[in-house]
Amino acid sequence: MASEKIRKVVAMNLLARIRRIPFWSWIWFILGALYFLLPLYATANFSLRMERDVIGFKAYIRAFEDPEFLKTFMYSNMLALMTILASIVLIVPTAYWIRLRLPEARRVVEFITLLPFVVPAIILVFGLIRIYSSPLVIPFTNIKLLQPLTTFEVGTDILIVAGYMVLGLPYMYRSVDTGMRTVDVRTLTEAAQSLGAGWFTIIVKVILPNIRAALLSGALLTFAIVVGEVTLASFLGVPAFGPYLFLLGQHRAYEPAALSFASFLLTWVAMGLIQLFTGGQGEVSGAH
Amino acid sequence: MAQTALNQKGLPPATDWKKWLGVSPFFLFAILFLILPSLRLVIGSFTNAEGQFTIANILQIFQEKNILDAYWLSIRISAATALGGGIFGFLLAYSVTVGGLPKPMRSALITFSGVASNFAGVPLAFAFIATLGRTGFVTALIKTLFGVNLYQQTDFDLYSFWGLSITYMYFQFPLMVLIMAPALDGLKREWREAAENLGASTTQYWLRVALPVLLPSILGSMILLFGNAFGAYATAYALTGGRLGIITIQIGAQIRGDVLHNPGLGYAMAMGMVVIMAISLTGYSWLQKRSERWLR
Figure 1 (cartoon, each protein chain N blue to C red):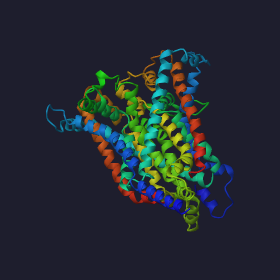
Figure 2: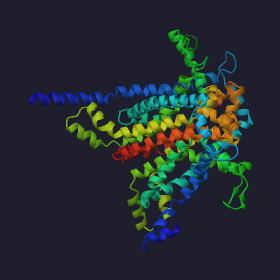
Figure 3: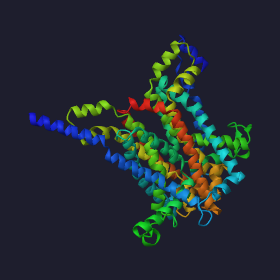
Figure 4: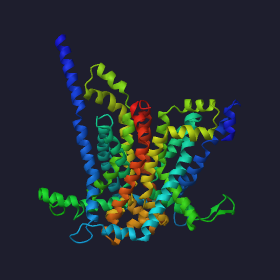
């Protein structure tokens, strides 16, 4: 009996010690880091060799000097921002309402949020072009509400932001819903209501701050989808960064590599900053 | 919204249809930009050139060898990268959550994962050409280290099945990390403590407690990865310039200009993709329901 107990204690000590040195965790992490970093290093390395036998930033200077670059890049960032804001405005109240008042809508809404997986970008843009390249007509009449969305700039912008919202929908909804799962939405709402808060105040001042980590990951994923996006942008013919980079890659070698690496660095900085601002939030969600 | 706010302050509860008003903007959006465009393709695939109903387009898909090959290639690439990316992504997520790596590793990995999934599409293709292309960095590295020329002494080609799969993995496993890290956080410490108090080893805890709880969510996420790769267009197009005939590239060519000389066949091809995705989605939602049982 006693020896068995001792053996158990020794075994547990050993286990605890092994757990303290997470050998395999390090292996996976290092492998992952290599997979992440090697292509980046290779791209950076290549982009610095535009001039023979010299390491230099010539490819970067050339790429940034092109006015088209700045224009398309800013445009894509704007599209990403619009998409994220519009998605939050659409999805947060919906997810909140379902959790609080309308659980019977959960299944159908979740089903819809998963549809973008059934309808990938290339299919979506196919359908969007076919629908919105004709004028918007009230059904069964000849009354035209709107000229075809694809024929004017604002219309195309609306169409592409809507398309991006659809592409980001599964990720955004999933993360918002998961965020609301971890905070007690009902209690928070009741507490806010007993203090006299209206619905707008509750969503903006109580719910949003409590799910900001979830919002952030949803926003990050949406951003990830939008900024480098090529499929919708090229088929809808908008002057976005993705198609620009693609065309540049057709007839240049070093500048596209430079831009690829630079855009990577920029987003990395942006996301690092976001991480910094919400660092506290991550701690809380990890602690439970 | 104002109406329902009033109801909250002591008035009788909202009737059923008023409750549904709260989600109506969402449904309107979904109908306009998701349902209608999809329906258009479905209708188109059952319509012939004269605008009459037909199933000839659907039947023709099964007779065109190049269309069937395109589907098959897409399925193989997607399955390979979903499995590979799923397993590797899970192990990475494990290592920074319950795996015991220091906290900074976790935020570094999560941030990097967010960026890496942003790195899909054209920049990703360029990066892998610089890495594993004919004159790529790793290609040269392997030649110096092992004396093996990937392109002359092996079958490897970046513009092939394996090349595209390796490239896709770059956005596949970070996505898995982003999805799995929160799920792994959902493993309750009490479960582990309870298992240990009952005398379970770490292996037993993982095999009997943690993995069964996580499995639906792991498999579900892998299906997400499958869809992610199956629908991918830009990366493949930028990498191979349309040389590798996966299904999305074939559809893209059809949108640009009716290369099949039959719009109906193009719609049917798109719908075939939708059907394959729908089958996997069914599996996903079933798994999702199972995972909700424990990971709330």
